[in-house]
Length: 372
Image 1 (cartoon, one colour):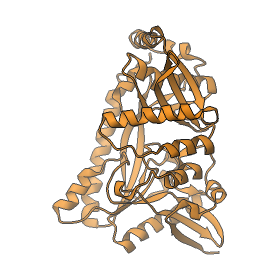
Image 2 (image 1 turned 90 degrees about the vertical axis):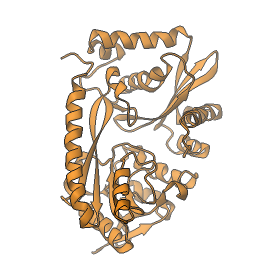
Image 3 (image 1 turned 60 degrees about the vertical axis):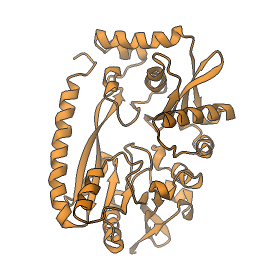
């Protein structure tokens, strides 16, 4: 039976069960509940560049593969920075936007992108290229894909690398003290001092899953999220309705660390949990010494140790995380450029970038806090 590619502009055009049957359920960001919630709860405003256009493959009436996708008229909320590419197109009188992106809005988190059995990946990538050529787009992009999908891409899909900082329980630590014991004296002492400052201030911390969260908990967390965005002059994309949606539809995957002083919330970190990984996404709170590190990093490490999770990804950037046990980790994206006049020079640009990233990673590992 032949396979047909179809494009849909809203995820609710598809049955939730059919979409979620295409992945193993261990990665919350590609779940129907997460992606459809972004659409339904007002988080994907077209003026922010996010216009859903999901790719699906059908064998008769059966959905066999898919890729979450969006038409983009800017690079807002992607975390794979291509502004230099857009400027290069403009210098030659060409338009870089619109482009098509396979990824998860506002979420620089590695996870499945080519959903379904591996046999369908070539057809998915061919359909992406066909969309670009048919619609006059500049390019197609697949951001933060996992290494097991790498073999699906040929050399025309330019590879970019970047670094994030992840915690890995490679040594099988059973508790926070055994984690600290693996560090050198200076970093171990620094972490203990940071945690002690929060304790001396009388701050209490709670772990709250979505199905345990009260309306007040969710309101407090959303307020902290707004506070951070306002402090940096950014527009908050997520809505309070979306946070309530996560609590209802991903009740055990939503994890919040809420800090309280004298019974009042003063800070919070919002995370999502996969099968073996905790993903830190948003934080906000008062400027209390050590509070950011405790809420965003140390509570998450403790949670992973208690829950038997092997990895903690606390967010996209921040070289300061190395001293707190988060080591440089490679992340990947792929890019198909329609115009060969741009594809060829960008291929060299990407090769140079990959070498620079690899060199930077080698230099950063020299600052690992762990003893040899």
